[in-house]
Length: 130
Length: 107
Image 1 (spheres, each protein chain N blue to C red):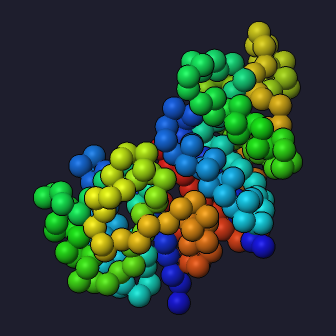
Image 2: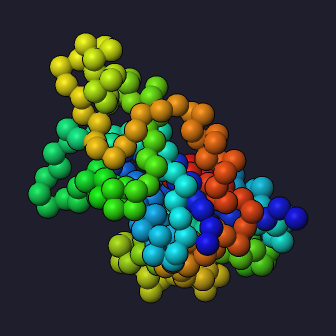
């Protein structure tokens, strides 16, 4: 069994977010583990709970959340990427006196140190670019 | 020896990623392998005029090359792939990343 870290750079509207999700499902089905998911740049939109996709489209943020919660995956959202795109947890919403928090349950906001740690401690790191 | 799997996710018409990648890896086919995903799979179309130069280079170098089956099917081009490529599904994609010490994504 090998451990993977996937870095997701693209929004749910990009094919590469779907590729990353399919890859994550396939590696778990093969008996490998996910050390961490790291949502970076526009990838942070996958962790936003305020998106309402049309009913005939795949709800990728919901699909990511289901995977994260089912397998108890460490799903980290880059704080700098998230704040500038308006994605905040309750702590950040209070700090900046924003009207609401919108980070999906199961995800955590943290920094690039978590990406460095993940590349050092997982067997493979894959970047899913937009 | 460090072996690297190179991922290309853009059609050759829309990005220079494939050209730049091949410039690096064709000279040393022992150390590298190519994999096409997403719109990158269009580079595997065997009959497309614009792909001939690249496909010939690939064939001559004997560099191993793979293409993601699901992305071919999504685009309706599974039966038009050049014989230079091996088809893999997502499980095969996962296995492939473990055969190389590094995985490099190009965009």
